[in-house]
Length: 112
Length: 112
Image 1 (cartoon, each protein chain N blue to C red):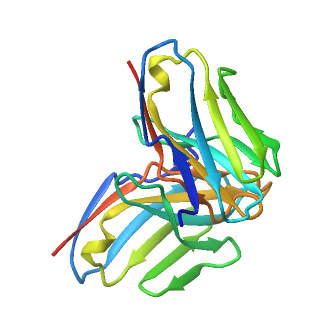
Image 2 (tube, chains in turn yellow, purple):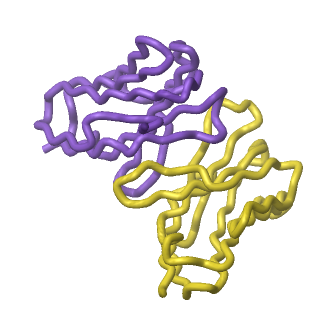
């Protein structure tokens, strides 16, 4: 049962444009959401997070939006840079707070 | 200084063998985890330990035995390796419970 879904396995964007990565979840008990970025041969690194009591969180070029009614969150990167090329994982934590559930990732390629 | 380090980075072995993967974190975190990323790129939690105490055992076969000699170390021992155990195994840590996780760079296990 895949509770966190990233339906786009890949995304290609021109440098300087906006990248929008999407994530859907099914479990209404999730109360905290995170995005991780992963380069090849490295572990995922934390990027940005959002609590379920908010609908937006911004950190520099990265903004995460949460639509609880739609059970949907998105990560916006603007402007996109070639160094942003990586796999992005969405993750969610249940209100019991015991573990993170990850999506399968979206591979972002930013073209110069 | 690497925050979460795991060894070895690559492990190639025959079916039926026993192998171990070591993990150490120097962040002073209380909680450590083992995640498995399979061929479909799912990143699934296997175990979590808090201050050397097992918190989560996510229906992992008992051929997998984690050991935490102290809160800075969480090793993974795998008995009687099977072809389906081939995957990338990530160690991670967090300050208190799941949220902002710090991952190691992964161990690529190939069972032949």
